[in-house]
Length: 340
Length: 188
Image (cartoon, rainbow over all chains, first blue to last red; front, side, top):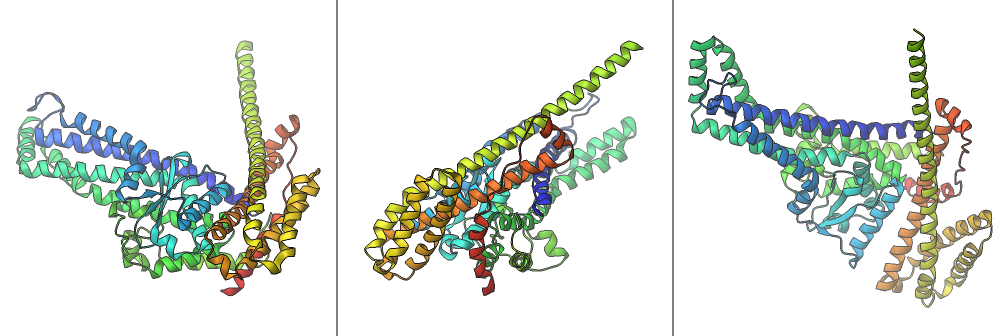
């Protein structure tokens, strides 16, 4: 009967991820608008009053179009792009290990009451796993070959349960969007910065100078210019931190949901121990998709430390902590037995 | 004035009607989910019944000393397929689960089977199907709990009574099965 609040949480999680996805898109377009307008005003010399160097804003519509295209592209093709970038191949049913992987995915899909996600294997010897897709009907779960070779069936079940929870809670939507928009934000701010170097920033200054003689708002314009430069420079960095923060908080929840699906928290705990012991970088999974994985593919020790810095830069909470929590659950579950 | 009051009453009636429709649809949706979950169990049980003869034929030559285990499995399968009542079928399926669990466990003692690709593959398929049966039951119970809670909690209970919804029954058997793997817990 203790299940009741958990059920509610799972709907809350979905609602929260829907909200996060919308906020992400809104934030992304606000950024695009801001960067585009900045290029128009400070670099091309457009003025809202109509007395600038160019009559119509040029960079703003271009940037918005680019943003729109990129958002649509990542919504429909983001998952495929992530999979392609890791060289993931569809699981081969003739191979015993990959057959077992597909079976375990089917089991977890049944436990979660979801359609079976597509199954992919990444040809990399470091154990890792991730899930992508915009909703459960368009989801994919990918594991590295190394994961299949090092885990037994029970441990694999724990890992797949973890990924299936990301699918069920719609974490994959928010995360896939983050991955794709992160790339776009980096590109845009790069364009803005390049433009700045080419015009030496002098355009912005002379513009605000001429503005000063005009309406006396020069001080404000200069301040805006500084803010704009800061945003352009910091946007990718802030977006990264945001992605990391979102991802970190999801991991504990996905661990707990995995235990709820498999009713066996020790399977996942054992898997995390093995994955932690084999901590070397997962070569094929790039930085841009690090937050999608069950453990940080970069093999950074930053995730294993406690503290402010680790909390800011790790994509994942410390493995030790996650294992301890799972083992705690098992201790409770072993006592009175599962309810219901 | 009277017109305004009437308008207000109609507005209230519309809101209540919409709410009723929403509640009713929610309950129907849950009921369908329960039926779906039930059908899923059936699909997996059928798949299991199809796999068993293959498995038994593959291993019976090697597992000479486990003939009664194999026989038990085949008998339980036959009774499950021929069952006429839910109770009879439930008992037979539970016995089948037990027998299969034992069979899979003793298979570990036969090195010949470990080098037999066909046997290994069948073992994986049977294990997967056993798990699927278990998880389908677990999911069924999860959905039944949602459906029943929706009928028992306050505003829902009015609608459920009004339209004559009945709570569904939980499957009690699998929890006994599920208890078996927890033996592993003592290891750590």
